Length: 230
Image (spheres, rainbow, N blue to C red):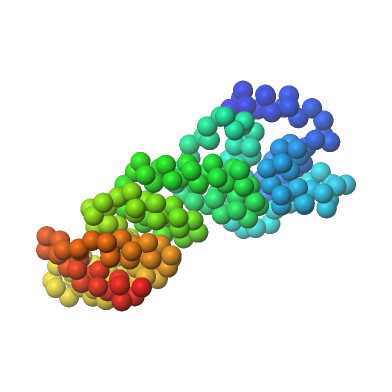
């Protein structure tokens, strides 16, 4: 948090009655009760249940202190102030956190931010990233696919294949020697990528003719295997 933001926050938190201490993963964060309660029904209920205490402990293992710190920094900002940029991985972990605690307005802003990044970047890369993170917001993945053309779908398949190959240790040499197991590869992807996201890809594949791509992999066979798994 910048020194200016820290100073403004201290001026805003003029009384300890307005502060709740959020503790997670050994980190302690002071939060304005009014901001927290107006942003999250879950936190509002918790704070009401423990009205005599100004401390709130979060025990979910996925709520890392870095995410909480970032989230509280965002909560300090008026809606007109842009959300500070963060990594895609942190966005992916923050969105389920926002869903769990019902930060509805903030969740909409974060999803819009992630969707913009998906549309501005390579949809194939975003697709694989979201699939690997098992992000539950499948509409973002579908949006990334829908905004791309045929080459985007090839890109999705290529990068998903590379992602799985890295995970299961498939050697490129075996593919070049002609003994690449296309069925095993597609089944590995089907376990790696959540079903609703695969469904979006199946729908895209059905809308176009998949041709054999230049020689190193028979994409028509891959598409057939995907349809079988779907």
